[in-house]
Length: 211
Image (cartoon, rainbow, N blue to C red; front, side):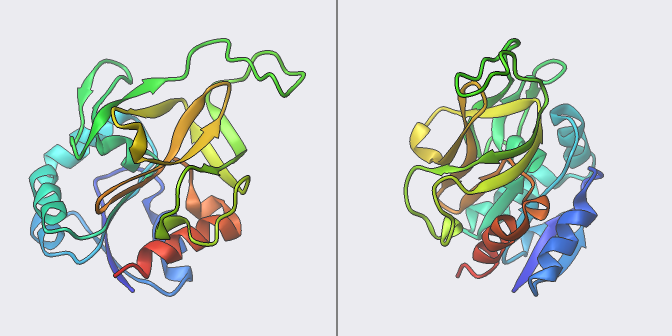
């Protein structure tokens, strides 16, 4: 139940830390690359912009350490912007290089999104509030999570993986987007599990209990 959480100056890290501690995990919060390299389980949370997030990681010499840890096969979880930073590049306020752990881009929701299931013709950006998860296949990360369970989102950009089979769950907001991704020992959540009540805490517990 021990995890290492990467502190790169992003917002909301403390909230994620408290959620893990609530389910009984021991959290080591660090910005030290050497600690990251030696971690048994890594979490990259955060709220903010893609570019500033990568700048925070680069200032602390963390990308290489993250790659070394992931290369050892340890479980790695990105949350919200942390999930977005896992990808090749982000298109928020310019084009920025990401960690490149997974192939794909982070792009903005198009304007004038329409919801055919609602009387509201134009959906607002950012996508903010509760929305449903639609698991695409079985994985221990979503053990106990059912089709249609709700999670809490706040984002204007979404991940577009090159390999659609890496999408563990989709969510619809005028278009289907990747809300959960899994590739080998890499895991990503676009929503805020710490704000997603029992569903979010269940997913965090599943991650913590992974071998």
